[in-house]
Image (cartoon, rainbow, N blue to C red; front, side, top):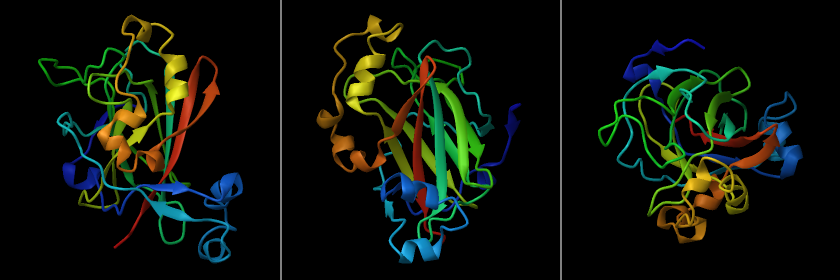
Length: 227
């Protein structure tokens, strides 16, 4: 998708928090199907659990760049992020929510800060009719003091009320970091269990990863209280 500019007021929206789809794969499917919604919730087929708020960190920029491919030719293992926004009360998908993501490159560097003037690995997508926002990116690197993560904000119509972070299973990260260019920076630290922010709810914000060719697809559902 070509880059386009959108205003700050319309790019982000009301969010109650991140949600992890539960009740196994059947529950995940039900959340987006006609058979889902309030009836599925009442029958226990779908359960939406709000994830905790987590710090925005110092590296967010108000670029408002709407685009699916955020790599800007940065080297790394390909990663497709499939982030779903659903109503936390009914588990129904929400269309046109704005999902804002940003993360560091394989060397642990964020664009647009610390003297860098780039915009790599930052972008916003609107969710489709099934609630999905999809980004093409690379597996994040690491920097001292933090485990591997992606920052995310989700919006529905005017005000940012939730900020979160998405995490990766350590075993998958170990496999990725044996590959170039990550292998140039061995001995990453900390791992998930040693990260103070991850310990405050990170398990519920961990992406489900699946191999896809030379890379991975990372998926999670994000739940919204409509207010």
